[in-house]
Length: 249
Length: 311
Ligand SMILES: Cc1cc2nc3c(=O)[nH]c(=O)nc-3n(C[C@H](O)[C@H](O)[C@H](O)COP(=O)(O)OP(=O)(O)OC[C@H]3O[C@@H](n4cnc5c(N)ncnc54)[C@H](O)[C@@H]3O)c2cc1C
Ligand SMILES: Cc1cc2nc3c(=O)[nH]c(=O)nc-3n(C[C@H](O)[C@H](O)[C@H](O)COP(=O)(O)OP(=O)(O)OC[C@H]3O[C@@H](n4cnc5c(N)ncnc54)[C@H](O)[C@@H]3O)c2cc1C
View (cartoon, rainbow over the protein chains, first blue to last red):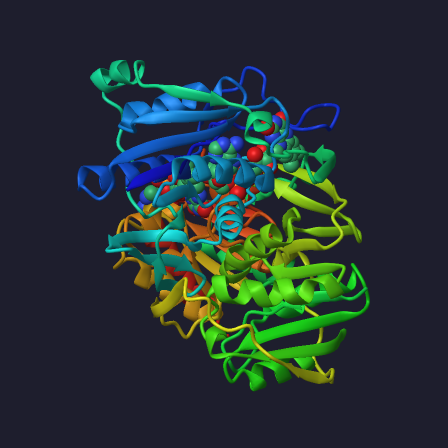
């Protein structure tokens, strides 16, 4: 069985982002970009499946500008086999990404697709569920543990009250949560090897997918700032402030 | 056209965040229907009918709806959706799982975690862990929106909307529920608690969380944690507050041994009053704290617990 994983190129989680002065978005020029952390977890899970003999090939998908090839290379260096980039400089919203992925799934026929539960830039938490819907597949979202057993998958999910266990039919879409695994670092030899692995370049046009954005971003603003507080010296002072100034206890 | 709020419930009552979703929905259109899909969920439907502002409750009974399997509930919502201008859900683990599936089946975009309804087609939503606020407009005929409950006041009770029974759509056989391992707690639920006591890596062990439990119990507070504390296994996953965990906005948030990474701040910086207890005076948590106290938590927490009166 082939496994398809999605990797999104996002602003690195350590970067303190800045809203553009003209309020059209967030400053991305000269900012460190990385693979979405949830996608590292997705790549790791797929590679482990191949190492256990549960998967035959790990294919990495990304959609976005040409630089996404670097993100795909990172996944290849971790151990994935080959990449597919749908190159686009246009804004891609989750429904469009899901449609692009569906087109690639139709071509590649993987038995499992693994994506991150949420991209840490737009925080949508949509793409995996949308892809599952478009394919008519089951979905194992917010996966904490994944166990693939003859034609189905047992998924432990992180939910509001704790953990939930479901059993879903394959093929399926899995979305990763933080505790699914700890992604490996790529070793130097593997980084070198990854340079020779193939990346197929596609376009939305060639796949016949309409990627026009459905949501129009009217403006992007800074959030309101909290006014800075004070430091107190003693617990007694803290309790007094909470009781008599803030009135919260 | 009316708005359809899809309610998560436990068979007896709808989740408390449904009342917040109803408030958000009534800002989109005053005619608000609530869908309660379940198996013997009549009591839950009644609890939805009691939320003020609700004009009708749809009680859809089907064995397939017993455990909120998205694959089975989505077709029902999709069937009902053409009669509505909006489909609204709270952005909790049920809404996050179901709403995008519904949106894709309807071939519409989804607005995730709206914090403000500007007009029926325009919403404000946080991006980049709340470090930017995007105002987005949707042109889709049916608008699928998840809302962040902490940004909308809960609608009051005392209403009496009519409940209409509707049929189910059956099981598709794609997915089945096996069971749950829920964390048991007598404490208030994290996202609706008035006070939240939260611990981080500074606690150094799960055992030490008992100290926070003692404080929480005295204050009648819910218990939360940073990702680091969850990853280290000190507490279960559902305690995680933050960008990729739960979003809370209590009257009082006490961050103990938490450094204040942006991913953590994303989940708590809308709290009314924030207290930080940390031994590192440079810790970023102090930048958002109204009251900070620099020192060893193992000394300060027991002192604080002793100093507050039991609620
Ligand atoms: C203010 C604003 C400005 C924007 N500016 C831009 C912009 O300049 N350029 C631009 O391209 N988009 C832009 N977008 C669009 C935004 O980045 C898309 O909505 C995003 O691609 C999809 O949402 P998400 O990543 O949050 O999805 P989620 O559903 O949270 O993503 C979940 C998972 O889906 C997969 N996935 C999602 N997108 C991709 C992808 N492209 N490739 C591979 N896997 C993916 C990943 O596995 C990811 O972990 C902007 C949006 C807003 C609101
Ligand atoms: C994709 C992604 C998603 C994430 N999502 C989240 C999320 O949703 N929520 C979240 O919380 N994090 C999240 N994180 C992690 C986040 O970046 C931080 O790593 C995490 O919040 C740190 O937790 P902490 O503050 O407990 O630990 P640390 O940063 O290690 O801080 C521990 C603090 O305890 C203090 N301390 C230690 N001992 C004592 C003592 N005896 N007395 C007083 N103070 C003491 C230290 O001074 C320090 O400030 C995410 C990260 C990524 C990459």
